[in-house]
Image (tube, helix red, strand yellow):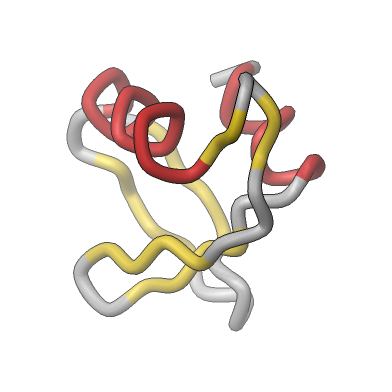
Length: 59
């Protein structure tokens, strides 16, 4: 399990980091770059920007 912080500063424990990463890559990037969209997961919100995407890749 991995812990990430949403846009409101809330800690979210990702139960399946591989599936989470796959979803972000498939639906929230364009040509391998983050698209700035918002991803919602179980009431937590994440802006898929460069900082978030780079942190996610390192998990």
